[in-house]
Length: 257
Image (cartoon, rainbow, N blue to C red):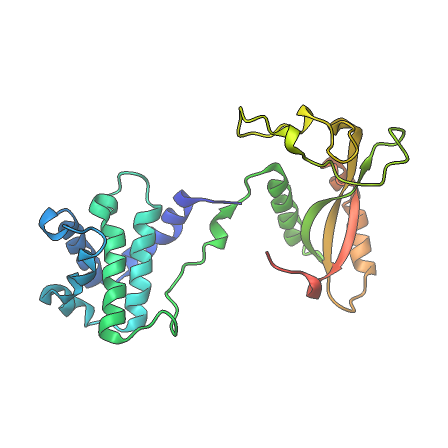
């Protein structure tokens, strides 16, 4: 999965920045101005941590509780870190200097300890998007199940039952195609499985095959008949995506990655 920085900035970071109290947004502007002043940045890593001691800065920070400041430092950092290149918030590292300054204030002046209290973090999962063909296929079918109000959930799509194709060599035990040292030639960062035989059986990549199954989640003790009826109804659809069949897994057994 790949994080969509542009969408996250447009749909979360920028709107959330505009929701911050006006004095905190003005403080971000002040940090931006100070970030461009070389006299205040002799040591870019540390000088900004002490800026909260400046009377003008401190007077603003003192107006807000820990929760508001905790959220503000995350929003400003996300706004700058996710922004398109050239955004003003990136000048002189203003966005991360604001974050460090507020965190240092919370720790030193408010006793906010990162061990006992958590720094605010945005929900980034909704901006993760499928990158590979398999991830896109999984996303497509999860959406299909949700739209159909299916009586079960779709966990994943997996390659199973790895083996040699029928008639190649029935003596060889089932196994996936095994990558060995001969597949790495040192001339490219990309690996071509067809550049050398399987390191286990010595047969070529195209001599191997496997099944593709959809892993369907069911609730403990539920009636499986409605589930089987639903799956039978989409059998032709999954065949188009070259999915060979289904397997069931209890929802309570699912382990989140």
